[in-house]
Each structure stands twice: as C-alpha cells, then as structure tokens.
Amino acid sequence: EGAAPEDRSDDLSINAREVMLSIFRKFTEHARSRSPVRGISSGFEALDRATGGLQSGDIFVIGGKPGAGKSAFISTVIS
Image (cartoon, rainbow, N blue to C red; front, top):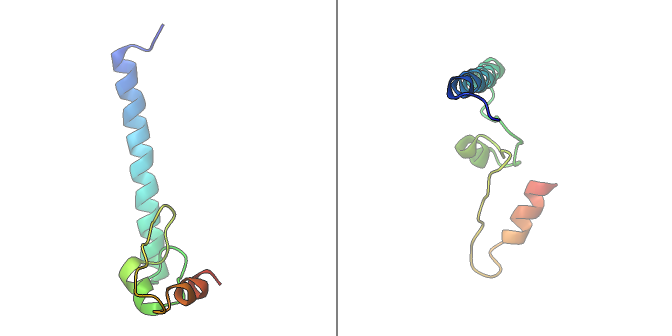
C-alpha cells in the first residue's frame, strides 16, 4: 500500500540533498555576481541594500500618514 519507512527516509535524503545543492548554487551565483541585489531591484539603492532586492514571496508593509507619498513610492517601485 505505502512505501516502507526506510524508503521514505531515502526519498527525504535525496530531496534534502537537492534542496541544499540548489541553495548552494544560488549563493555561488550571487557571490560571483558581486551585486547586492539577489532579487528584482526596487529602484531605491538603500532599500535594495537592506533587502537584497524584491524576492518572490516577500511581503512589505508600507505605512505613513496621509499625503506622505506611499502611493508615489509604490508607483516608483513597480514601474
């Protein structure tokens, strides 16, 4: 019906190894590029240095008083 417990651990070992290799490749590519941005540039150098760029799955909350420029900031980032 199902895989034996020892078979499952083998599958997990292979998957963990593949994940670690993928992460290592990404770190290696980033180190070779010598760029502080690993994702998509926001267009704001200070923000990119702090965040490494916009990454898939990231959520940013932009807050401020009315008229503080939140919409203008987001418009700049997405353009």
